[in-house]
Image 1 (spheres, rainbow, N blue to C red):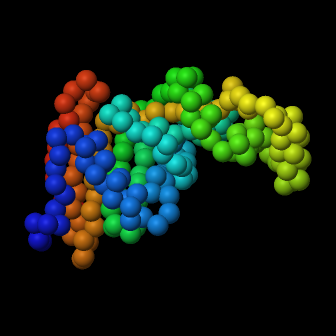
Image 2 (cartoon, helix red, strand yellow):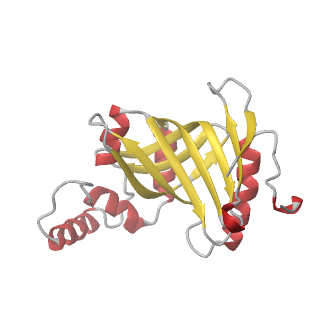
Image 3 (tube, rainbow, N blue to C red):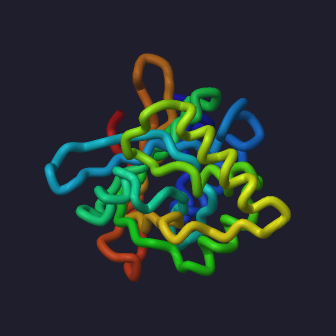
Length: 202
């Protein structure tokens, strides 16, 4: 294997993630911040869905959602989650394991205010994961809310906000021919501890 194909190990995973995410933002044709979020509720049934990461720093990875949705009920039942970024154009993945907690109301307010107005209306209109009799019911709710808030600032719904995933394990995966992939794992038991690194077999 050529040395240039190897993952260059940084002091901490966020430094390496920043490099990879910057390259994905430039080279991935659509939604480089897309990730799969895996959750498990009290029944032990795993569930996975694609989400959009909206920010990250050394405290973790942040996404936003309806907090009355199925995923949010699962997050309250079990705060252990998994994330997976897959950048097909770069043949790279990042696998993250950690725990989730709500972001502050101020942080949720700030992000909600930055969203397109129609997305703000949608957050009020959608009773996410609940039964819907028809598409028209949703469209009628959108029309009614659009009229209600015409010319007004749309406040953040009390049931809508963000979650932060605080990681304890982050794996960087770089694909190669013949399934001879390069894999590096960062791990720590608590957020106060230093990261350890380990290259593992493909």
